[in-house]
Length: 264
Image (cartoon, rainbow, N blue to C red):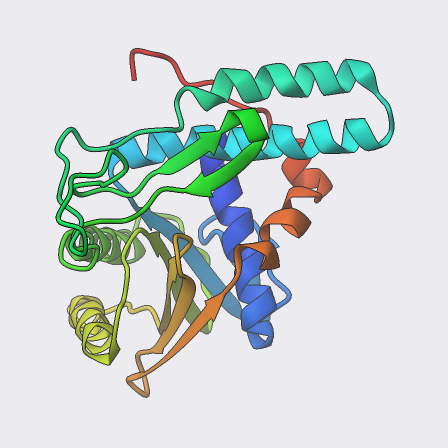
């Protein structure tokens, strides 16, 4: 399956887990390659549509959370050695998680500039003193700014699917799972993104039959869009639906953490 980072593998397991939890008719799925998820005559390819800086911070965040799970388990079993190692890993990842754009914006309600107000991108913030993680406040337009990243990712996957040398296995039904920071606020935005995705996919002879659009920010959501019926289904869910349970899986805990370096 090639050289995949901690973040790559985490995102694939998270996509599998989310689909099986919220759309069990597609499961069970097996994590393989070309496409990434396979089962029941269905192949699902996974793609993320984030900026480079976002991916770097998210990778550190994932490492931090996995180490946190190991630390908590070690505390419960009074394993001091594992607890120390896990806390060191948490400390190593923490400094890479907090990030923000250099520009600040005024709060719409107070009119004051907030130190946590983000101009363009979302962020993860670590409250290390309380050993808790919280999501930074969002400011700016997370539909207009993120939609081009989503559409670009969809187009590239369509090109790959139609490349004779890409090595995709044949399935009666093909799906695409797109994870992004896109925030969908209303039916008008939902219709716009689905229409744009539909238009891109239909340009190619070999097509994806359905698309999942997932956002693991706040609110956590997933959209299921069927290209044959042109119907979309939107579901919101809580982070606890997948994170705690998913973090406990042995194949996630066995993933080797990658510490980011300052040259990235």
